[in-house]
Image (cartoon, rainbow, N blue to C red; front, top):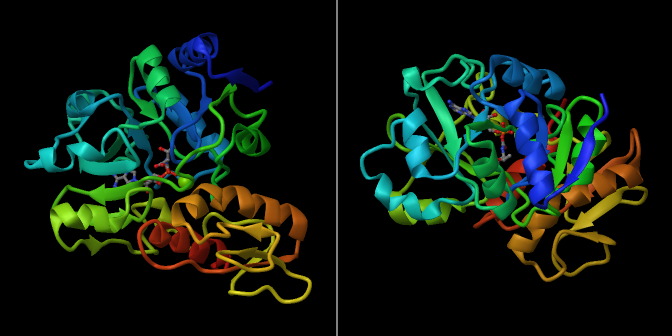
Length: 311
Ligand code: TXA
Ligand code: MG
């Protein structure tokens, strides 16, 4: 199958929506990372998402919707949701009780009675959701376990030939995936991401963090994830022969943010991991400086630990 690169104008967005309505798959931009989109009501489309990613089927998908009213058709918003409503549209995913009669493919939720929902903020994603007019299943658009895509070209690298099209919305501004907050019972932070934990805790109070690596309910909980081909070490300075990725002032040619800005570091993270991987090659080693464990730094360090995890 030839994978078409679509530009993010009215014609391209219209073509992408038509592919989705016909049960096809489209790589789409969002403010966090590129998603691999398919109709969340269509078993075959969702099965093809798992197949294209090579994803273990116990790992359920996020459903993207245009607004909280649309979310309410598929999931039960909790009492007190108003306090969180200001994070939408944006990089926050909520895991909520599923409305069983909502018509989502059971493959989207991997058979769970909860569903992960997100209202994205990127103008192109929002235009695509309007043009498509349905719930859009969308994991990150990378082969399972590999580095997440923050450019249309990254999606092409990983998935060309396996999906109908990629909609090019330019580089992703946030650069790490959405924060996942579980609200089925007491609030639990399932994955650190684009909304800092501190911002949620300012509203909800101290949050439990969830996750059992052996029985993952969010993908970040699989230990080895976001993995380049080469080996990854978390180290402030690279040794001779290693490709270094720095943070803050330093000699490294690849730097998440020379000025030490965590927002810039998140936006650069996956792009630089790919660049380092190309330089290091098969069997090479990448040394990456950990970043301060605050704000977006939690999401960045989480991705770095998983990129460095034994495989
Ligand atoms: O920023 C993002 O969240 C991107 C963009 C494309 O929206 N998407 C993304 O999707 O990162 P993905 O599939 O790579 O990560 C979403 C994860 C799933 O792997 C899954 O583990 C978790 O959300 N999840 C989905 N449904 C869940 C559920 N019912 N309970 C717990 N976790 C769930
Ligand atoms: Mg992913």
